[in-house]
Image 1: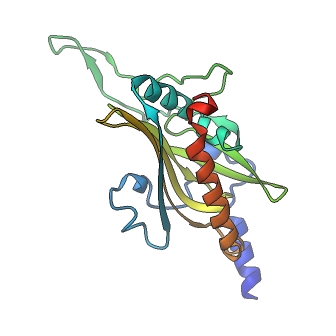
Image 2: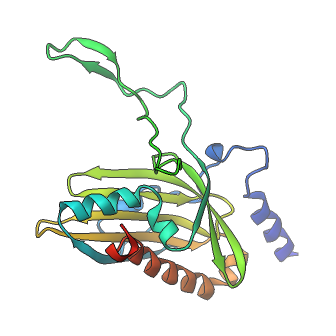
Length: 231
């Protein structure tokens, strides 16, 4: 029976209980595509693109406060999502970032391949590339679990943020980015970009519900860093 075959396939994509989440591949191929300027016009094939933004205020202090909260999972938590089972990326034997040189060009030490993990005031690991986490979303009286991995960090003058991609078990397949921008006119904005599609046949049946949930979550994301929220 086709349906039974599909169900077995969908179940087989979930990681085994004895498999570390850091070893599980992402559930989509276009990693980093939320950085593409033409995402809204040319998303990865089969995926639905989205971009929303909201002004958070103005000034360097506003930018610093908002971006600091962002990197402490403040957007997700401010949207009512529980961020749990946070696992920083583990270094590997193949990590190599080159050497540190003195002013005369003489190598003096190995450069750290992975920056030191930072923690929030409550001891929660801050966002870092390779970090995995389990997001828990309350919807229609049920807890929906959504495993993710941080795929890149944005740390540029006037831009700070990150993106995460979905892991097997997430209701959707795709990527979402959250970036705080300090523009030339001194205004500060949060920009949320994403591309996604249902991860299994079961969630495809509920596509209208998924879109409603995504739109509601995005509205909450945009409000999470507002000054009224303490960011």
